[in-house]
Length: 238
Image (cartoon, rainbow, N blue to C red):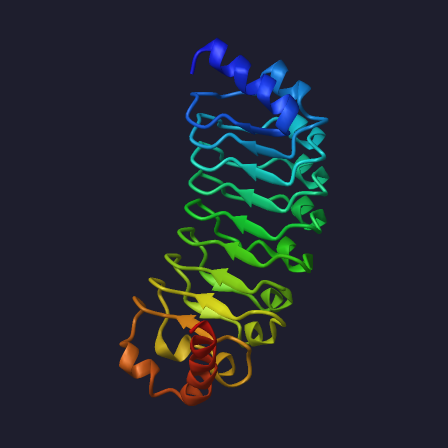
């Protein structure tokens, strides 16, 4: 994208509070971009060449939507925790290894997409967020879903394509969890908590591609109770 086209994007953003600079080969924040910090509500810098985010991202305090997917980020700055109005964060398809604890300050977050990264520790800072509906951690390097994950308030948790071998039975205590995706992990049948079937609100439990046959899953104690919830949800859709 040439300088004249970039200039038009910046000028439009001053009026609309939305800036989309996807596929522009950007690797750093320009002065013109930073000048928009007091006004922007949507910022899309996906499919660029960022390896780091500047601490100045914390100055964009009106942002509601932030998209940094498909870059080369290895970490996120702690100043992201200053974006208190943020509702959607998309940092999929980077090389992120760790998540700053300050993201636990983002009380308005509704959707977080961190799929296709290199996260190996379950990001428990999201457990404090009461309005977070969807957390996508698919295609990472997670091996355990710890007890503390029971404090998540998400409706959907996507853990597909990790290396998970262990799930705490306390995940069944998640107050809003209805869709749990665990496809293509390293789970044995004995690693599937019976409480998820018998004593949770989960109505969609996706387990294909683990170390057991799905017909074995159908023989687990509590499967009938799970299927009642599953069927009830399906009926509501039609």
